[in-house]
Length: 187
Image 1 (cartoon, rainbow, N blue to C red):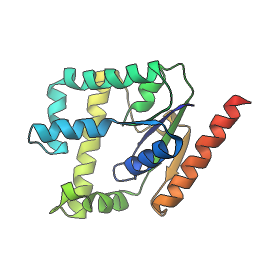
Image 2: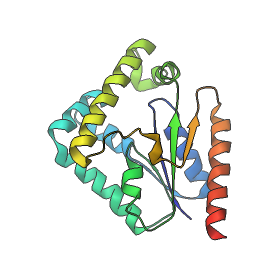
Image 3: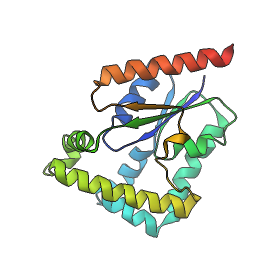
Image 4: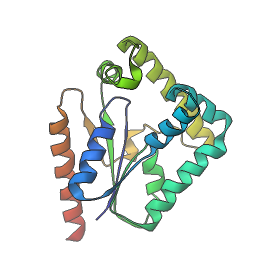
């Protein structure tokens, strides 16, 4: 067993792949972005507005982050999808496999545009919102954890660009790499 983290670009397919991998392996899934989205909805905010608000309330973000860090310290058999899950997984004594899921900004914006919560927004608007969100996230993670660049690919074991791949192709690749890494750790 292992802890498998997913980070990467907006609209790259992280959530879809993480969910499928958790199901295939029989692992528990932790979707940190889902926690943020639920809280944002409860407050009547878009996810972009919520991320700006988090900058004013770092204690809220730290409390969510502490939960994921604690979970990764206590057990393995987890698939964690979160921007800085790799950062908290470093504190775990279990085997960790970190995936960066990349996508071309235009493709990512088109994928985000197709989500129900983004109805009425154009792909160009989604691309601008994504760029702003990444900038806000970069500032927050620097202030909270002194992380210079949460998207620095050197934090990851594997980098997969999904721009020209189907979800099935990405899943097959991630599953094969995961199983190979777990098998090698047992040898």
